[in-house]
Amino acid sequence: MEAWFRRRGLPLVVRRRRGTALLERTTPALVFLLLIDPLLSGLGVLLAVDDEEFARRTANPGYVIALLTLTVGALVLPVLAGWLLARTMRRMSERTRRVLAAAVVMLTVIALPLVENWSGLRAGVLTHVLLNLVAVPVLLFLVYVGAGSILSWALRNAVYQLGKVGTLASRALPLLMLVVLFSFFATEVWQVAAALPRWRLWLVVAFLAALAALFLVAVLSEELRTMVRTLRAGRTADLVAHVTGTPFADLIDEGHERGKHPLTRPEKVNIALVLFLAQALQIVVFASLMFALFMVFGTLAVEPSVVESWVGREPPRGQLFGIQLPVTDALVQVSLFLAMFSGLYFAASAATDPHYRRSFFEPLLAHVRMSLAAREVYLTRWPNAGQPPY
Image 1 (tube, rainbow, N blue to C red):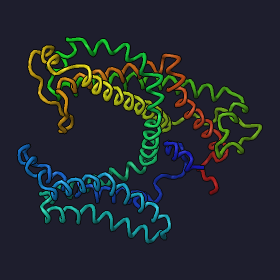
Image 2 (tube, rainbow, N blue to C red):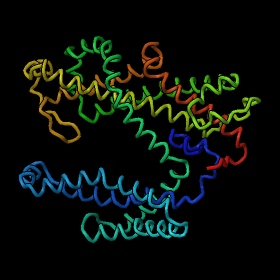
Image 3 (spheres, one colour):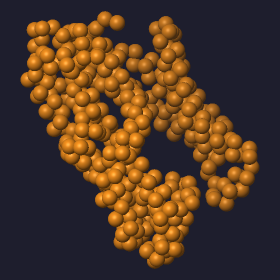
Image 4 (cartoon, rainbow, N blue to C red):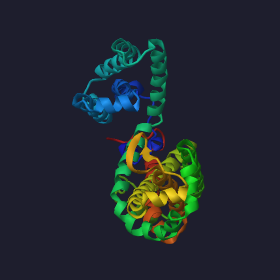
């Protein structure tokens, strides 16, 4: 039963004591840290050169292979090792898990800084040890509050949102393209965007993202209050309808009393965070799609000579996150600005416009309604410590 809530990103709904075996549960995250640190340090050593030296090194196939190997390893190996260790530890005895957890802590805090210093990957052993000493209690706290459950749910939801790109393209893009396309050909937009240093453009993007976040928080808070009031005032038949298809469907009594379990503050934060992350991921996917479309459309429709006449100078070659792109820098700047504006527009439309709301917002609310109804059944059946049988 409790695993059901954790899979839905709601660990704070669970009433089982979260401090039990905390260090053992943190061990996979420590293994992740133990592996990601030297891999990123190695990448830093390979990339810590100027452009001329980097171009000379990339002519060496061995350097390119080492760079690609470290990059893929940094992306895959720590996650895979943590996942495999978590599965393996379930079959270990309690004593073995404790010994393994203590050994991993010692390796992370002491052995890792010494090895990296000896190999030349990182200097300053004492500073590294102190940073890892801080990282361990931070990881313990994150595991205590269930950050792993929330993160794993967010990753699964991100994959799900990527699968909905077709829905986004067919339902949200056409109208928005008509609204934004005229701005794409406005000379003033190109002049403003091209004149901004990249760091100031990122500040503009962050400002628009903060506006979208504030709007989402206000809307989602009101939606959550409405759902809680509706659930308390509803009938038992409504509760049954919400939990149909869940492990709680057969646990409702006819005389089920409603409203006995108001949401605690941590539960409100947890549920609001799940709603916020789900909606934010939709916005990120949509904004990324818009950025890609503007880049492709600008490459096909706008010649570099036209861009030069708009911005008043020859635009430099574009780059993003240090990667050289075969387009002008002005096109990258304009695409980033308009994509973020499109994301803000989508955030407002998804929560207010009936057409967008039915397609993109209501499924998220249905997810939370089911979770709230299941929580009501869960706390009614196990009101004290929440110790359901397994």
